[in-house]
Image (cartoon, rainbow, N blue to C red; front, side, top):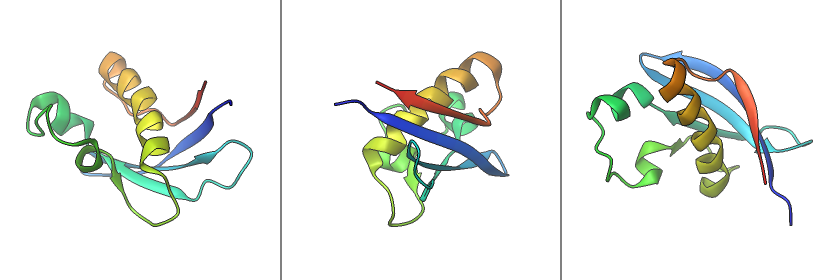
Length: 91
């Protein structure tokens, strides 16, 4: 079974970014927030549970899907220091 998740940047609130996400070819109804600046600076501990790092913002979503989108966003942020504007996770 293939996994296809798309995501797009919504807005920046301080150092936290909001993203919309969902299954490919469907409406992006999920919404999560992540603060990578705080995570990389150590303000958020590395042993913090993922649901407190990738914070879901509505009830139309899956934590697992949001975590997969987060992995792509995190890799890009760690490399460039900027939030990814859009992308996908495909497996």
